[in-house]
Length: 330
Image (tube, rainbow, N blue to C red):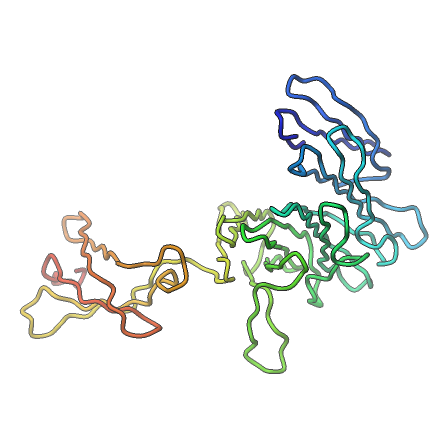
């Protein structure tokens, strides 16, 4: 179920052999209902088209000797009329049927779909397709390969970034998760030169080392995304920036040393700077705060400007509020 933009909703339902779509008004009246939009269907995904209509994507198994299938996409007007309907994955021409679609709509009303499929019976791969508002398939009749790895790639999830691109996440057979950023034409937005010249160019980031089972992926509003996962009994999260940079933004203290011959009271703190502490971002770091615990257990705060020394670290001498204790916890 998805909203229709005027207080009502579109509702999809699958029976044993039919895929039905209905529109309910804000007052609960059925504007039109039980519209049969497909047969032998499963894994229905709905998205409002931002013009009062709705887009439906589903997978359909064909009764053919090859065991193939289709991945279909349709767009409907508010009155239920069909604007387009396509097989977006090439029908039975790509071997086993496409499964588990995920969809996202961009600000330009481009519809992006990703799914996994095993075209050559040597492991599933992640494929994608983009349709513009008229239903034109921008990535060809069978879509585009997004995960060229030779190991199994499964359960893709796609979200729209605020810069008009798309973020795609998936996992492999070892439950490791990966993410890639692409534009509406499928061009990679993250690209890194490999360490060895003979290795292929790197175009995705790895989110987790393993045990990815219950992951969710959302855009962060600044061109990146946040992945949340429950590997065991805890929930963990990780963020990737618009640039593809992973990890936490906090600086890391690398050393704390006494300043000799100053009669106590001063220490030199050295840290690796935050990767927010750089040019070209909306809110760069201009000052660091250093907290320490004294014997009474009450945290004390020392502050000072971040004095730039080189491109790898920031150093600052902060005046201590208390003398170093004899056990070195100052």
